[in-house]
Amino acid sequence: MRRGCFALGSVVLLCCGTRLAAAQDTTAANAQPAGAQPVAITLQEAIHRAQANEPAFAAAVAAGRVAGLDKSIARAGMLPGVTFHNQYLYTEPNGQQNQAGQTGGQAAPKFIANNAVREYASQGIVDETIGVAQVAAFKRADAAAAVASAELEIARRGLAATVAGLYYGAMAADHRVVIAESAHTEAEDFLNLTGKREQQRESAHADVVKAQLQEQQRTRELSDARVAAEKARLELGVLLFPDPRTPYTLGEEKAGEVPSRADVEQAPGTNNPEFKRALATAAQSGAEVWAARAAYLPSLGLNYTYGIDAPQFAVNGPDGVRNLGYSASVTLDIPVWDWLAMQHKVKQSEIQRDAAKVALTATQRRLIARLDEAYSEAVAARDQLVSLDASVQTAGESLRLTKLRYTGGEATELEVVDAQGAFLTAENAREDGRVRYQAALADLQTLTGTM
Image 1 (cartoon, rainbow, N blue to C red):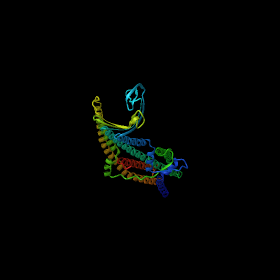
Image 2: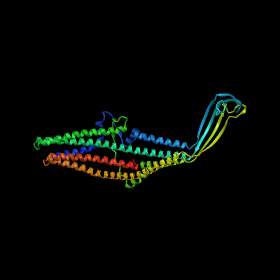
Image 3: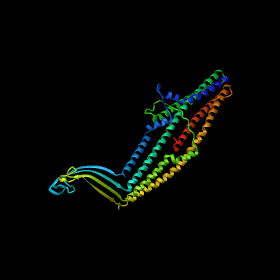
Image 4: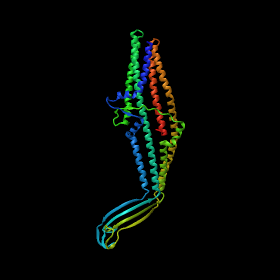
């Protein structure tokens, strides 16, 4: 009988490992409609699908594109603008003759600002304004585009970390279903064993009652594990598919290695988007100061007009008068007094610039602290995985030996139940440890820009 129990314990442990390896297929079959062909999803595929479906990331992409167009618009503001101007103007005559027209005597218009009763204008106009304000506007738009680019990268990394957490969480939930199924099978086997021992009058009925309570508890835990796995899959499916109920399987992703301390400390200055955003924000506030101060300086306006502005819509008028011609003008606007409005705008921009500098230094300090915390968390989680694996093996061996002792009458049913609970706790703790390590590694990779 002892040999039979030993073989039974070995088979239970072997089945547990086999079922854990097949966790995805088992839970997918239970959670999805029969006959549906599941879609195989890897972590990278999940991230790619989430980028197409997540609205916050789509908004960040749109903001980045808009900022890029703003930069192009600001650049165009520094270049000459060309307009093709066409106009027909009719003015009621006043009944007098005007001798100052291009054709001699003609009806004089009632409005003295107009040149003739009928006036045609068809002109090409080139305008250019030269000033520091236009350059400052371009610098400001350039910095804003850099801020939007950094925010887009922050959104991308944040989404990747979120998807990774949901991905590994769903995978762990599948594993917990297998663990719960194994624990339920173990409880059923123990219930059968106590029943046989009671029939052989080797144990009391209290052992059967205790085994029944244990089996009922494991049944409830299995039901909860399946519900939790379904919820985890639906939560991830919201980011992956138009219908979150679409059946899919998750590929077993091998956890990466923790990078070296030197690589972690070197990465933030070149790869961290939060630092880039703070730096670009500081540059943007500096451009705001420059733009505000530019209002103190003169602006030079250039205008060149070529075309016709005549009583006839023609290149040549009567008697050989040529209507086609050009005009040019240069204007210099010098600000004199605006009741200190410009001074107050400069002061406002300087206040915002100083606040941006404080935010930049705070971002640097926070980044250093976050990197140190993330690295320590990843290393600790990695080191604990070895201990958790050893605990599972130890708890499994303890369960096997306790069942052998119970079969031989050397242990009580409470010891078996405690050993079963310890084994189940160790397996769930190992899954929690794996999720913790994968989440810590994803956080570290997000900070260093390697995800």
